[in-house]
Length: 370
Length: 168
Image (tube, rainbow over all chains, first blue to last red; front, side):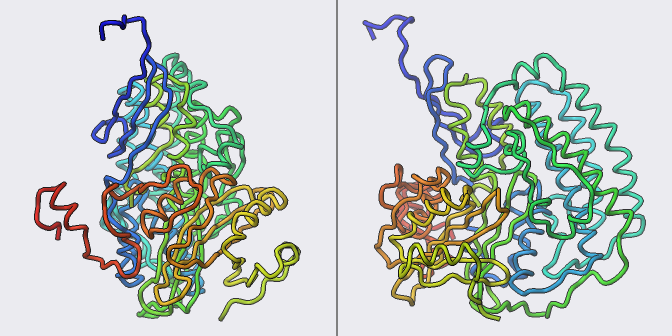
């Protein structure tokens, strides 16, 4: 110590998390710092590992359905949709049009709820306190609709293999229409608070840049990919659940920085409203459950099905050995894959930007650790 | 309904190029997959990426078949943005065989291979950082192997680190 002065720069290793409000759960990041500059990071994950894939092999197909909600718990409906689609693929059954429309409405509503939670907490991380109250206020309205529909607000278990268990309640359509009408001006309100806010722009512009090619190398999908200029959304590229029927845009930006990812997500919420408005205007009549037996027993085989979850490509690779229990269910979680790019995004940046970049990836640890 | 042969230009190109090393190019439920000899995995991934534009490794995972001589399936799920097409590559390996790492072709394979190692005990040769990723580093056993019970734990780890006799 005697030979060093305060002007000497030594590498400092700083531990962030697992108990830290801005790591959005139990993520531990080891930062190597030179002053305020980040030389490298290492992510330690697994604190929330519950062995979901192992549980799947020890439950029947239907019994495993509620477990998937506990992965990305802020977008449980997307998780459920992906799993149901994968098993339906294995069974090769058709889901009735009415069930598909209701699924789309609820999934898009969940996308809005997920993006709202992201926006609120991201703004909180950056230092803007107000938006989180606004965001949670509107998210509450979405959760109320979930609660009315299936009795649960967060881990909803809203869908069943083959379709839906519950018919919509009286006034469902009207409540969705009211939500859409109420919600759009609120998106403008958030943008008014943030989009041209000098501090917000200063903290986000040119921070954590990830180019389109880097995204592909790292397998990064979702809003992060779209903010880097790649116009790719599974709802358009490989439509499922009747998304091809709806008219909507894929918002993209070109810079691939934290600010662009914010703009993309804001625009995505508006597009979700558009999809919901179209879907609710034309919910077909008919059954809500496809031809699925009481005992779900897919033939021997395997399938990979993926959907556009709020965080990116959420995939299920299911292997059936012809019994009532899945032989293997592999979940391809967007957050896990996206988090791997954290090091690339933050290397050379400032320590304060780490918080911004973790926030902008929109990770959920329940999904990373499974 | 069983898997049917996959007839397309891509399939015949792969069969032509890798010959005997390809044991099947099939389609099931509209999804195409290739089954190949283990040492061909990386050349095929490279070929698919550089010549056929399959530039996105969606997922890399394993399936355990304990009764089979080649115990593990290693599954690579690939996607091409320009073709909007998916293909799966499967290799079958015996316990103890170390497949070559795919990190040199797709960076995303890094964590995915670590997870396969963590859960199945399949080591990837040449991987830059072959450690556990979700389980604790000192944990004994590989949870997603079929002979690993659902209630099974590394009792010693639980005792030493959690200070309790059993987590069950």
